[in-house]
Length: 99
Image 1 (cartoon, rainbow, N blue to C red):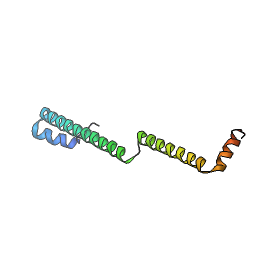
Image 2 (image 1 turned 90 degrees about the vertical axis):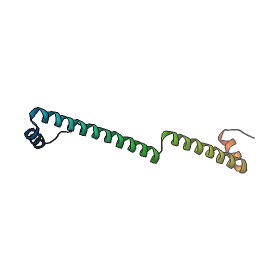
Image 3 (image 1 turned 180 degrees about the horizontal axis):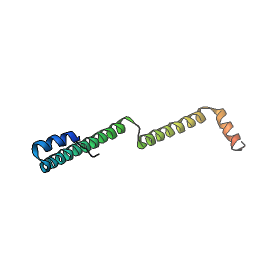
Image 4 (image 1 turned 135 degrees about the vertical axis):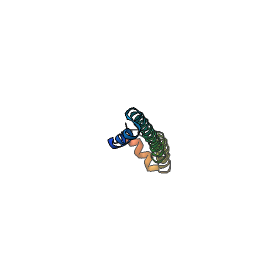
């Protein structure tokens, strides 16, 4: 983002310093301001990305949660099957296994 000084500033510098010197001073000020803005923008962007990474779930977090959920789901299914004799009969009927 290019920063520019108002024309009034240039005109005031031109009156006191002369045309060529005023151009050099204005260019230096604009370059300094532009560099400062770009640096602040990059810093703000990096801080924002870092904060988002801390606050929001990442893909790795979601995959870890999914794997834990799958393990718990399998444990619950096996527990139901092992502790409920009717469940074994139902499963055998579903898969057409006749006792």
